[in-house]
Image (cartoon, rainbow, N blue to C red; front, side, top):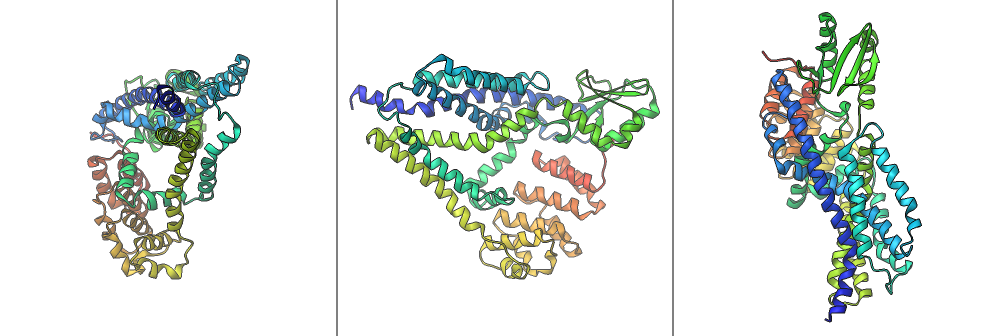
Length: 503
């Protein structure tokens, strides 16, 4: 192969190269972002422990907040969502400017205006330097790589060719959209992820590392535990009343500490709620006592610098990640194919291959979802030799609020080797009110899979037995999984347990 032909084939990898570069830049930013957040969470949790409260995450997780792998692997969430979407948009703008706009500078005015609006929006509720870094750096980096690598004159520079290259993406998007309903993501987890070892590995990675980035952009009302300082109020009776009210909503009182989420001052009859020394909300004790949840939610909203960033990340998860994956896979296949095929044949090969890969995931998922089943079919379903039928039967029991103890064959599900089956039998046991099913639920508290354990805690909370508080507290303190600790804590709250300072 001649040098000129080699260079000609290699330049068709520019789309994947530009997007990949954007992801690398986003990963650097997200690693720093999550690392700083982890350190802040470490300090806040250490204060909660020092004050004598029950921490979440517990002391088993606390050391991980200082480790690089938690920041790097947690940062992948932002890289594959907001980083992917910004890379995709920036590449598209660069490509059209070079190939269609012939590098006319005035054509960049709308793009620059959009860029400025995004940066303004992400700082709409206070300057947010780390969130701004994604919008400021990633687009510039990807656009720069794109305009340097995209060739201006190419023989297949036609809209029809571009439509053909991306038609599989449109087809797959339509087919997957048809699958969307309230059960889609749960069915995808059960049928695609938890049905094989590779999928279980992906599922476990998700639940292990996504809480680190999630903590980055949670508002106060989304956080499990918050901290409050009441030292500036001299009225001790008022302080005790406020502390009791705030404790119910998991605002835990920290003394002699300025770095808290909420600081309350009393000025005359007015209570001033401050966040990081910034006045956010004013109220009276009477008003706060009458509607504490409403006012705390208002405080959370006004103190939240990540509102737009969260929304943009969610949109990126739905659009940016799938499209970026398509571009990367398409570029790799086209690049490899171009070594042995003509450029046109390589494009066709890449498009068809992407369509086949997408359908290979979609078709089995669609066929295994099954239809809707009636109550009369439950006994037959959970006794089936097919584990997916048994899962369907357990889902019907749970969703229709049936008593699982009335179906004696359910005990077979307790010892299944399939994670979704054990998961759904636990969900069904959570609705049960028969004493003999209580032991079956407790027997699964040491299940080897995190998803099952979490739902055991959830089910124990629903059973309403306050004698379970000591068991859940033990689990909360000994668990090695942050996600499980969230479920144990919420189950404790469901049983009426409240935070109290240890002696």
